[in-house]
Image (cartoon, rainbow, N blue to C red; front, side):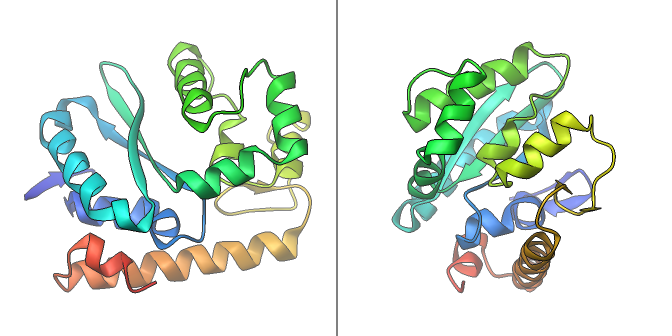
Length: 192
């Protein structure tokens, strides 16, 4: 199905651009924003993607929505669960008021916080696989004084972050190229 969405020719292209690392399995999750008005077209596609990517362990979930935007999380439940169960991460989420260790429950709580907040809750970076030290650094520095930035602002291990940024960019470029050549997203992502 072809349609214009944020300047992309298809939903496959939009997901390839914003979610390639999660689709390729090198990142626990990516987030993509869609106009809520597009959801009558997008929702059936999410159902199709859920079926097409199920055997690869990738899930598609509406995190939250308002009248203007719908946030869709593309994630690897097992990888995300392993990340969220790390002692330092789970303790930090509990400090922030999150309850339970269930991935689905934590995602519901995150979605609620995003919906109810005038500010984006910075802990969303945990769910997206950003290093906890960088999330804490961002909060402590109010987004200032970072050592470098790319997919997130880096306050700790610059070399590691740059390697990840490079891997994410290469992944995105390869997936975009395949989709532009007419390869369906689920088949293009299977090459990783």
